[in-house]
Image (cartoon, rainbow over all chains, first blue to last red; front, side, top):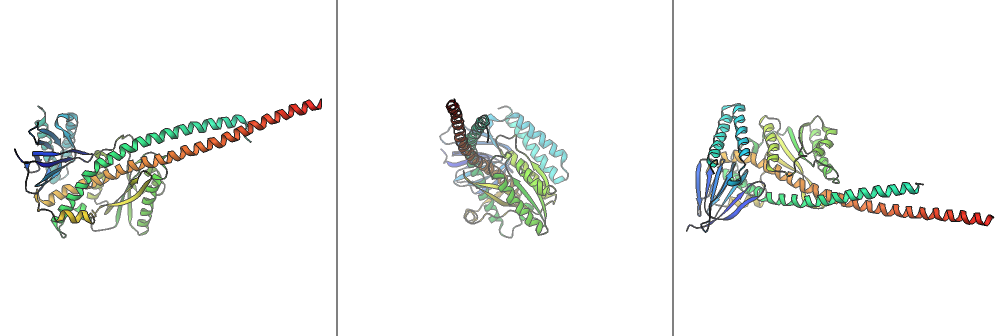
Length: 136
Length: 294
């Protein structure tokens, strides 16, 4: 059994999760990363995606959908500050569809290349996310 | 002198008013509890945010060049005031206190020859400031139909602020809101948003001594992402504190109103009874003197 560490998922409205976990999969800006105890200190931004928490004691994995944010990883703890976070089972598909629609408009409205690249990236992340949770 | 019927009507109307103020007081008390819970639930996020921000700033070092939003434009000519107030009145001096602070600030800046622009959040602030600064108000946000303030609303305001900054519309941005000190005490507060004021004292010193972080992507890029979000978080916190403060102020104001109505009813009842007695006595005297004359 792997060592446990403290995982916290915080959204601006409230503290969603504060528990001991064995491993947490975070959709980092530069790829997914699994955080376990004694991880080197890392600060990363988070793209829209699914966070999977493997709780101690071998319970069922918990999946949360986050829309951007950043994670503060220390050897003994991991704090994920999410812009908005919900349980994957409670995801509001219409809300997601609306976000994708907004992102599409952003891409069209983008004035320069830099902002267009940014908007397109965000859009692709959202559609990937939609694909990932649709069958659930 | 008012007639007996007038007095009766008066008492009835004051009683009706008292019932309303009492109900409003109880509603405010219930909402206050909810608002306080919301403000407390939001606290971990803004605390962590502050810690992370301090961490990165420390990592970048003093001379590091953060994003423009953090450094400001280096000028001090145009000031943007974001004034957050409530959407409803009947809460004592709550709104006018915030507005007064903002107005004094604006007057001072104008006297120094600076340009002032104002964004109001909440209807009452707009109503009050419109009188003196209608030309300076460039935008307003109303949250009247919103039941529970969520981060989305704060983000909306933050986006406006950031857009204005990117368009070079202002140099310094200050946020006005009411800090919730306790149920009976709300302190109108001005907080500078842009350029970012480094967190003072312990908060800045403590995390700096921590482990060496790796950044993914670069620290600077994270900061680019973080600073706009920080503005939204600050506004969100201000809005939540405002709601709690508004409810606290409303509760106190309505408590006073209920008590005043009670006093008024007492006074009116005494006048009413006295007058009724006087009339009875008068009628008796008339009867007796009539009988004696026979």
